[in-house]
Length: 85
Image: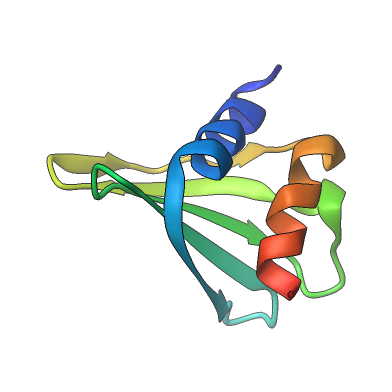
């Protein structure tokens, strides 16, 4: 499992709330809030699908990190379901 998939797995299994917003280029930005208050962000292009998601910023009460890690289509399907339902 790559790092992007690990971030996705954690967000999908431990996350509670989520929100979807458009990016400046028309893509999707998905924010999943963990029970601890951290927020993991994911992005994909407008014409993208399950295999195009990237794990991006992590916001945390103690700070944050910037990522740009790809996820596989296997884990991206869960993100796609949340973002497009």
